[in-house]
Image (cartoon, rainbow, N blue to C red; front, top):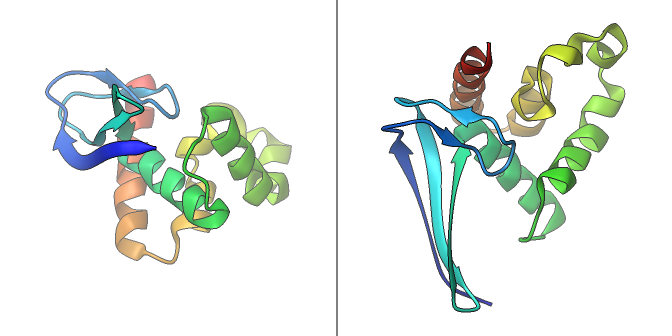
Length: 130
């Protein structure tokens, strides 16, 4: 049982690693910072804006609160990638499911503001990897 959890959005002063996708959160970009205490142990995580949005979509769909990158990746694949035409043309080779525009659009389309922020976060993240 969680003793407490705090989640806030910050601008990175240096590069960090996203806890969910493993990609770089570049200095100067916005990210989500989560700090919690669970069973007496203090934990902190940083996630891209788009990764956090996808995590929240997954949690809303499944009702689960514990996760791994693998579980979220499988969910993205099952919900979007399996039926996406880009997979057949190797269009997926350049991006991960976490930063794919087709995934973001399919899962976040109900919230245009969130979708716009997630797309920008994914774009900046992809530029940092290039």
